[in-house]
Length: 105
Image 1 (cartoon, rainbow, N blue to C red):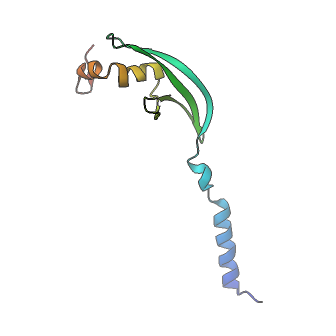
Image 2: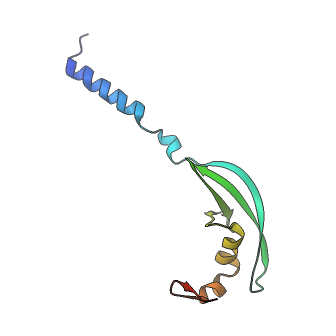
Image 3: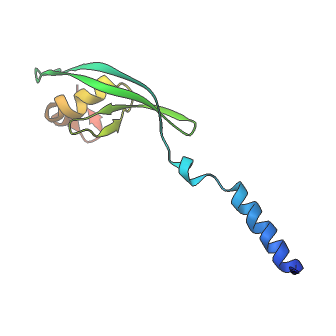
């Protein structure tokens, strides 16, 4: 069976392109590197919580996540304990302390 030069070239280009494409399975894959807990306490007497946290690596990026009620993992913006307090324990008090984008404290 004889293959034309055009078909052979197209096959070579196509196979090269497939070889160099990133692996679709690993493009969005996360690796859990570590688990732990942190303690979060309300500044306004709304209680406290022991929060599960985990260190995640996605490609070359590492970041911490905290487990919210209901099982959802949310990325921490910095300190997971403080983020949990702001997002859950003191949400209403903290949101009333904001005026526009400036925090009045």
